Length: 193
Image (cartoon, rainbow, N blue to C red; front, side, top):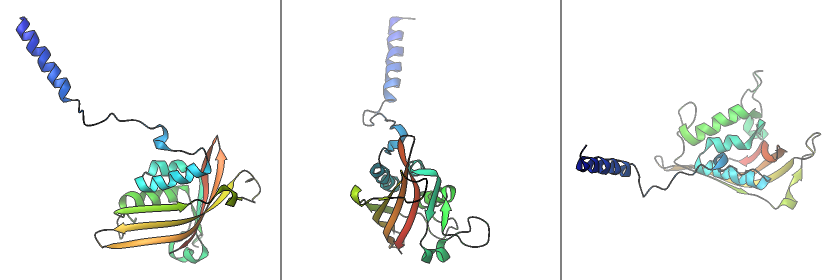
């Protein structure tokens, strides 16, 4: 092959390789654990806010203990309670799988029945109190758990209908340590809808 042909082939190859590189797109950085920070109870609650802000179901799932429970206040059971144990009576709680499904719907697709779309804007703000305001869980076997009562504001904004749904109140987060990290074991809702 003549030298001129070799130069043209090399030049063509160089142009091809250069066309695959975009100087305006920085390299992707794989954050370990999706940026999940769970070394302290405060980090867990900050990661919860981040999961909502980013609508990241994987971060959200990583914060919940496998035996997680979401607990409703009594006045909400008739409206949003579900029959968890199959006895025909609405229960005041649900577990990990239901919570992940509900939150994934909130983040991505809206209500299961299709009546409410996913919000255009989603905002969760927790007011995490100082550590001296935290409580110990008095239940036997939970001696190393902490209970953090947080004031919260949740806002779901729908641009198409120019509407907003809000909830506020207190959420009691029962956090437990396991394998050098913390998990949300119970989220007890004490909101005002």
